[in-house]
Length: 358
Image (cartoon, rainbow, N blue to C red; front, side, top):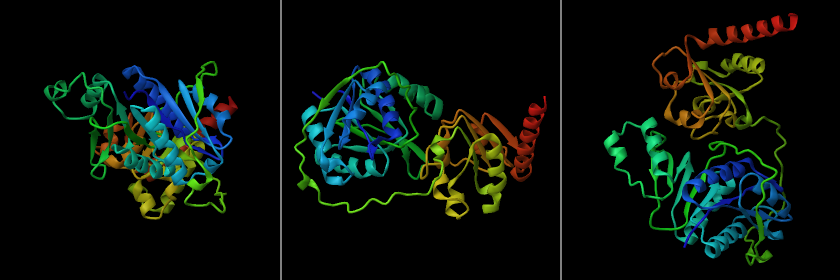
């Protein structure tokens, strides 16, 4: 019988990636609804020392596969290791981060195990009641339709943008196990670390050898370009079509500097060459959860909203009072961002100067 929720932990150079902790936290919420446990699968070389930290973030058990062939990520050894775990431990659900590594590994594992995979999920539910609440808040379904959902259905309900982000689709995999999904970094909430929390750590021999490599890595060239990851920013000042060009981001940078935040952008800014791709928020960019998100000249296409709708507080500045971003925002300012943004930055500077004097 398939049971428990497994998280495939991603590590790079021995450092566990943030998305793995996010997935462990989300798996914990799902486990509370299903009566199962959270199991982390940690793969690498000389990596066992990271297992205890995974327990502190919520894993009940950690399966550690430690082998020299796993020192650097290559597809075949990692896929073979995950396949071994699934066939021998029979999980009910397996979650991957939708990073470059997760997107490479997950579909290959699904193909070998002969199960489904839902990619780039933005929401996961087991509880039908919680899923019904989500539908009531975000869709136009009538109460009659929502009430007809089978409350005994314990399948994983995997929600993701579909048809170019124009709709949100919920997918279930009722006939095959495990149920598998990839989740984009930044979508799920980071859990609290509890240093008193303990878990079981199990060393697993997946039968790997150095001959499992079909690709040999000759050299790893690090990216020395130092930049702040917008997914870590607490405050984001984001520009859209309304900024008008690359020069339009300069006032946004000044405002972000005064607020102690970072500048980001909708897709149009990246596609037009106005700003670097690493600053893009949205379905084809990054998913962010800042404390404050200022949307300047962004109309609010669903593809963009999918990347920032979980922001704690949203301020929209736009000439169009009826655009979707205004409806989502906690505070809307109707007007020209080229006038409002510089005045806002000036007001913040004046306020800070006044506080210093007093």
